[in-house]
Length: 536
Image 1 (cartoon, helix red, strand yellow):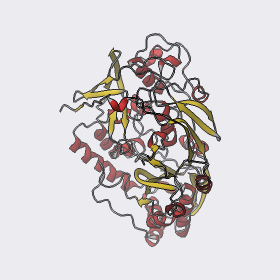
Image 2 (cartoon, rainbow, N blue to C red; image 1 turned 180 degrees about the vertical axis):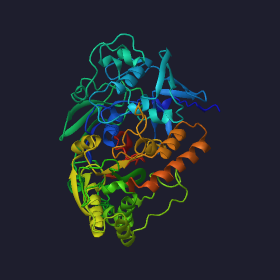
Image 3 (cartoon, rainbow, N blue to C red; image 1 turned 90 degrees about the vertical axis):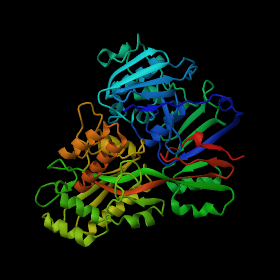
Image 4 (cartoon, rainbow, N blue to C red; image 1 turned 60 degrees about the horizontal axis):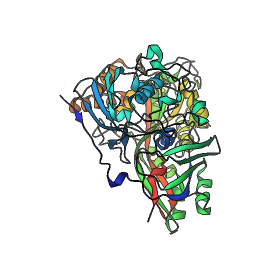
């Protein structure tokens, strides 16, 4: 089967520079980016910041539909070969022209990034067998295994300028350092601004961790000029001060206001808000591999999380409806699989996970733990909406069935590196599908990691199921949509039955701002200055 995804864009009046408003947009963030380096960590706050400074070959709009970016069209030969035609006349913020060698350099850097956290995009490029550049405006990628979603995956990979390093001829030859003769960039080179060179609508002015991120309009930007001369992102992790700052006029836009606080602005004509459903699943990942797990203590000296009955008991102990209504104030939907029902690869009618503490206690007794055991739930306190409150609630539910659960909540800057080192027994997670299909979660978290780390890069709990691995590997390399969907549904069924990942709910994205601004909510929960326009 020959797949084609040819897309073009007209560069007429819409691409002319619009009148610019000499104004600073002030945005209060609930979760601060941990780095300017766009390849440092594949996190929503980091990826959102990167979109201001860097472009991608392919873009996603607010509904996650694909749009041309630095590539104007792409085509697949029905097998392993993709051809991308690159946009001409584009310049980086330092004035250097954009071309195919910059894309090749970017791919290489994801595999040569020694300061990254976890896989961070190497799961995409690790599947590249060959990358060729027939000319400066053409890119040909041959993958090791068929990758039906390559354009979608590349919509999340920010493109760097090869001019930031010393190099000879740039080629996709990783063993020979791809032609790079100087040192590879580190996270600090981007944070200090020296290598934060992109083709995006803004360029970095300053990055002060814990204080502010300042951007200024990129005069070399190839697209329509943004209305804001500068943008100032300020980290305000507590919802109360974020809302207070908006009411006081200190901020123009805030992300993730507490749903319960929206009543304070609903009747105030000075302000407006938007709630947008997202694909972000909030869940717990369990250490099901180690006999001696660091934050589990049972009377028999074993790790109870290795027992599927214990995992099911934990899931049955959680009242998802109550969490969605009381803690999330209705800005969430209980989750019974890892992507909202109706999206590609999901189960049409997933079995509802009931709140049944009686059945949970019975399962614990059958597993040999009638008196429960001790357990610590590890979580962020500044990443997901109400993350620490959710974890506290789950701990209380587990305590009610005899599992003496404690909570260790910490800032995400500490949490994510520790989780990547597998230091937790039960870890809170949040994952938004950047592909719009179930494979996004199913290929990243449950599989046994392969040698290239293109799948299973976030399998911190050591989950392993040979049948699952067989099915998901077949699914992600199947170009036929109908067959791939059936395989993804099989994979979903297997991982749900094993219970190594306990789904909780799907978040909604919430933004509030001044009434004279129009805010477009995004399904990926990105907070972008480009999504804020003057209302008139």
